[in-house]
Length: 344
Length: 156
Image 1 (cartoon, rainbow over the protein chains, first blue to last red):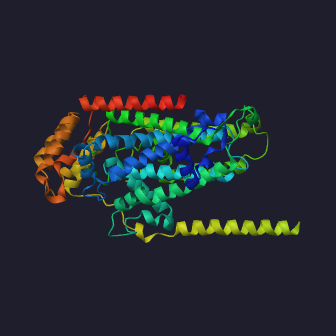
Image 2: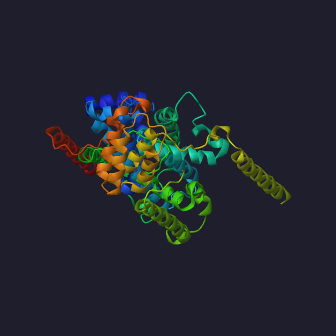
Image 3: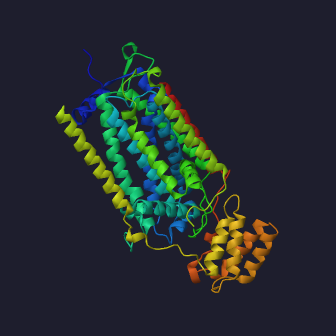
């Protein structure tokens, strides 16, 4: 009989208190491949964003009169400020890309089907929350692009009637909208994200990993969830390395202090499809974005029954491809077109 | 059978009422949005708008031209060097956008912390480039190490 090593004794003591062995449940081998790790890599991206965001929050002043200056000071006076800001921005882009790939993987493999419909809905809500975080982050820059994004936000809220009241500058006349959006960016939306994420991970744990279309689960060698987390951490390191390299090679700039009443910029790539819709159909075109989200939520209802493989889901896959082509097409159209005034 | 029909009827009525409520509330004019967009008439704002139009890529020349013309006819010219605005208009006429932007910035210089509170340093974008300094290369080595560490963790 061998005596337990010191590390084993530490593990036993920690595990007795934190019940960490619950994370050692078995997962199939395919769960450790990149397509099935994209959700966990998104989580790693969020960790990077939270840490860099907390650091930036110490030096950012969410007041319209000084917000632009405070960003310039972060870039020029705060030690490491430019790099941290760069990592935050690039990690935000990379996280959204990974999340969209995760969504595509879940869609293509039909992983939203019974019994995972609720988790799909939570995932769609997470996508919306992440887009809202990206949007509010864009506004916090408080340059020309930011003020125009905010003007579009206020105008669309007007279309929503009383439901858009929160986005009105008059909602809280003595607190600037920028300050309230900052509050949303650093507390309200992260809180929503945390709640949704907890629900998402809980449901993943309860239902297990969605089945692989080609590989039967029984034929798979099994690993533990700890192994899955370790690989996700590896990809997280890669994401941080990429964000750092991009922050050094292409550091993000800061535009001139904004002036309202003019529209001469275009939004970040993520919102270009919505911008394209606005160019084609006016402000009401933004309902198209709402329609896409409603369609995403309705997918588990629309695609029920039939065989689980690709052959049994031809219509769903065709619909997904059509929406993807439309979204990409609108994005390319907006990217190529000249900025136009939608509001003035 | 009848129970199922009643349930589906109640569901239909509920959903319809919900939709009507949402649409009705959306249609209510929110008092908060009664403020109308007002075209600025002071030269300071118009010149700043023209400058904003000049500083995007590619410069929105037609927008900038319109704003400069309005600024030239503005009654309220406080905080703006109008001679510079005229020179900006001339430069724009010659399609020299860089010179026009420089003239507009110069036109706003008297306004530093004056009317409108324009700080000239904030009128220009701050666009850092790859510095090529030892610190930048150390950071790049750090990035390479992170990439290698990530690769190692994935492979093990």
